[in-house]
Length: 199
Image (cartoon, rainbow, N blue to C red):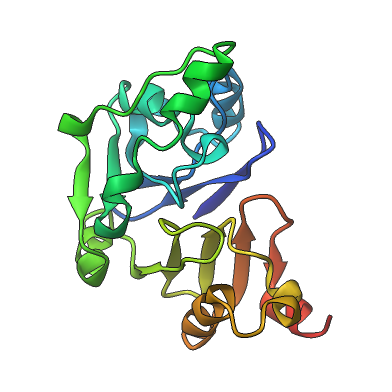
């Protein structure tokens, strides 16, 4: 079961597996109350979220990750993301207008992208994580076996012609080879793959 949460300018997603609940991305710092209100509509409590996966560590995607983790969830960090975890800390410190809790390095769970399928199985979710740089070096995408694809801020597929010969194209080619059926973006509307290819 997939729930789309629209409580901030960043789309975030709850994925309910057979053994646990995964949150893909969070919002900007200060959006925790709105997150909790949005969550109520799903019938899932904050304490029921087992893990958080972040597509990349920009402020609008990781801002409330630690606040959610403080309620019991574990922040999952891919091996390709490890050096980027605190990239946004300085931005929040400089802005100083939102309550921001930096990610606690001692409580994260590092995982290898190459073994992500095993990690997801622990939650009863079948799929795989891919390193998909282009928007940022630490960007990852989550592809479920049912064809659901979560790409964070990877440039929308309908813009692909503008990115020929770039990392963005390479990342999309990697994902398209897995035959996604539905694409869940960080900021654009969710689309069925046949809708995308017709544009």
